[in-house]
Structure formats: structure tokens, C-alpha cells
Image 1: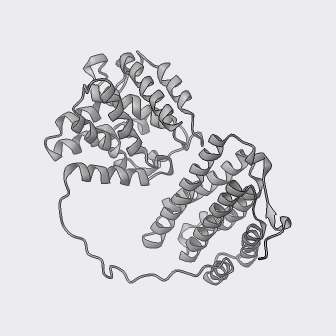
Image 2: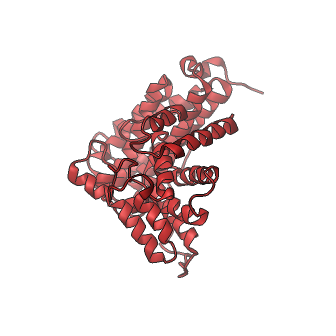
Image 3: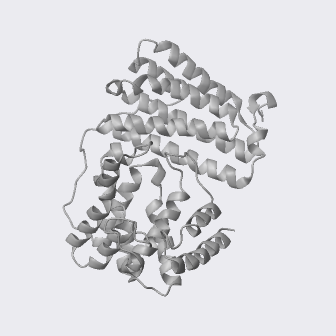
Length: 369
């Protein structure tokens, strides 16, 4: 059996020498970025929209930046070439071609395969890496005057793929008019929200898991079913906020902040219209109130804030801190998140609830270990 020589492999000692938790975080972020690219490609192929061009560029740029941060030079160079190809359409979204999307999916798949090989074997296929680099370089030369289907098709075939065939619209598809149960529908809406941003992957599930654990540890001050509904719906109102504000990377103006804050009213009003979820609606309305009365929308304080709202406030902040965000591009650790929450007791959070939440997070860390 023939085996590849060492010359046909590449490694990256600087990256492999890092702590396993950092490598794991990097892998998670890579998968999220690649998944976001796929979401954007599918959306662009079916309905278009310049916002998906922007989202895809952010994902690829984030992946390139992450590679640079962990010293993964061989893959960072690849991502730079792939990004150069995509940049041709960034300034002119109307020139997007389905073949470009297919090429990007193949290219990011190659990146994931090379990363997996590098981590699991300590080295990865240099021939495959160089092939992708050469294909990108050739594509750059062939598209100096703009992207063409012919050039992209040639690049796709060079990577061993083939241009997808569009299925006839609506063929064999049926939409059944039915009303799911309330909780299932709420879960679907929360899942849709999480797909709107690469920085929200699995955010709703994480929120529910933590707020359930905190409620149990506190002796169920909130009705568990009402709390589950509030957990799914607390940020769903964000779907009704303009994307230009929701995804803005720079600081929001005062007027933009007011618009963003309306998401709590949208979410609570949706729950009220379901009927039977008045308690959950109050939790959603209150989850951005501060313990000292400086929150929104009503500026209430202390025990005036619904217990479910106080719990959601802690958990929502914790999830936000431990998630990569557009304004900082990296995650903070569990300990950093807990420290930040503890630093804001009496001001933003109920101090008694924070004490119990510390135990919840400690148990979570022990469970993970």
C-alpha cells in the first residue's frame, strides 16, 4: 500500500501546542462559520438578498481572523484566497451566481476536512491544501473582469465537485395548513431567530437548560411551563427589529436603542395573543429590568420584577457573554461570565438568585469535566 510522504503533509506546531479547550472552541467557531456560509448560500440561491452577502462575508472573515488568532497560518492563507474570490461579489451583490455559492461550499468543506486531519493526526494533506490554493489563484486570474459561470464551474470541477442542479420549484412539496401546539410553535420561532445570526447558534436551547436548572435550584419560584414559554419567546421579538440595527457592529444611537428595546414588548404581546401565557408574557416583559430600577421598559426594581424575569436576566446575560459576538469576535469563559454577573449584583441582578446561579454553573462545569 502506498502512503503519502512527509513532504505531502503539512503541520502547525504552534496551533497544536495550544490548550485543548482553545482548540475545541476554535473548532466550534469554525463549524458555526461554515454552517452560516451554507445557510447564506441556500438563501441566496432561492431568494437572493444583499444581507446574506454581508452575513457570508462576515462568517468567512471571522473564520480567517480566528485562524490568524490561533496561529493556523496554512489555513489562514487559504481563507484569504477564498475571501478574495468572494470579495468580487461583495461590492455588487446583484452579480451573485449560484455557482459561486457551490464553490464556496466546496471550499469550506475542504477547510473543515483539513482541520480535522490536522487535529486528529497532527498533520494534514498538503496536496489537497495546495490544490485548493491553486484553484483559487486560477479563479482569480480567470475572473479579473468579473465572475462567470464558466470559470466557477471549472473551479468546482477542479475540486472534484459538480454544479448542483436546481430542482423544479415546489415539485413534490406540500404545505399542510395546521396549528401546532403552543410550545412547539414557540420553539420553532426561537430556532428561526437563532438562524438569523452566527452568534446565536443553539442560544435558545442553552438559555432554556440554564433557566430550568436555576428555577429548580431556587425551588421553582416560577411555574416551569410558563418559564419554558418565556425562555423560548424572550428574544423572539428581535425578529421584528430591523436587520440594520440587530446586526449593527458599532454602537447604537439612542433612537436605535429604543427600537431594539421594543423586542420585549413584541415578545410579550405575542404570548398574550396565544392565550393562557400571561405569566410568561410578564417574564418576557421584565427580563431587561434591572434590580436597582434602571432597566427597561418600565424601570421597576427588586421584587417588583417577576421572578422568571429576574432569572432570565441572569441567564440571558450569561449566554451573551459566553457567546462570540460581532462587537468582539470571541467568546469569554464561564468564569469570566460568572465574574461579570457577580460584579453586577444589586445593580442589574437579584443577589440571592446570583448566589444560586453560581452553584448551577459550578455543577455544569463539573458535569462537563
